[in-house]
Image (cartoon, rainbow, N blue to C red; front, side):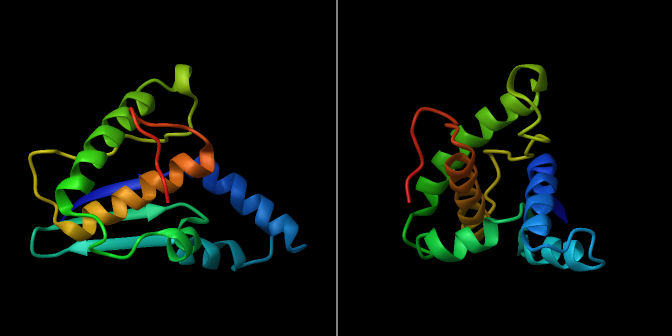
Length: 145
């Protein structure tokens, strides 16, 4: 199965450290691992053999609170936004000296492949979340919720 993996490891480790210290239980065995599992989202389209894995603390709760319901946006709309945002993401991921290591790694998103609605929907929501939380703008239009 081919995968699209979206992860912000530096942000994840910083947020995990902040949450652990906020809860007053730094270094508590198993707590960080449980949090990482709860903040990992895996969406698979087994028919097309593609999946998206999102590893970012906070995304799951943001998604449950703010994401528009499925089928609110059309698939062509999601694909158009993803095309622009992923392209800019990949430019920034390829230039860590200019943009820092916030972008982690490139996203393998091929615009000639139909990933299906669910994969595009989750990628769109992650890109929206990422831009809002990190106060950055990828591409020519700002995300909105």
